[in-house]
Image (cartoon, rainbow, N blue to C red; front, side, top):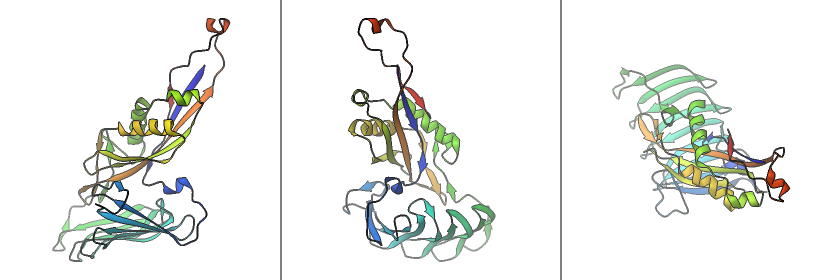
Length: 281
């Protein structure tokens, strides 16, 4: 009997480095365009922002995001592009005024994290050591202290946060019920891992579902279909406002051979029936 195994994992953020990179001359720059909801567009038409990734080498580099008018919106340095932040990261208001400043060492916040109002006054000041907050204060526009609140709140799936295991486990369970091993893939014995990226918009909708690295047309389509069926997300928040968040899901399709089971079909020259799919998380 053949047992079908579909393993599902979940990664927060982009997974551009998963694909590997061909031989290039560095520095190397890529440009992508995003819609108002954060979805990837094929070109600049209708784009709300432009993202430039400048690779210093095969791993490290800097990401710069610009608004539709060409004004800088964000600068983020990476030791591993899109995954491991290293150095000072800065965001800007549409006016060009600094919005936030923070410093990273090995993807962990270290030092001060400061948020500014549009007039340059401090709105929030926190200090970190190895990603652990040591102090935190929030301020009103007049400089008076106000009750502290979290700057970043992760998206939730069916009530469980995506930061940690509970939300991830619920996504895995939902995908396990959504995904189907294509018959054509079974016949050709096709198997492998499909990396699917998607966006949870500021309203909690799943959109911009696309294959980052695929296996074949049938398995790629099966993985994408399963992700598109996901529902139940609550959007994350940034400084009290709902925002979009990107995720990457590696879905593994695998066929393993189990020991043959006695069957009268064997004596009639038939074939053993294929067992029902089971899922490995």
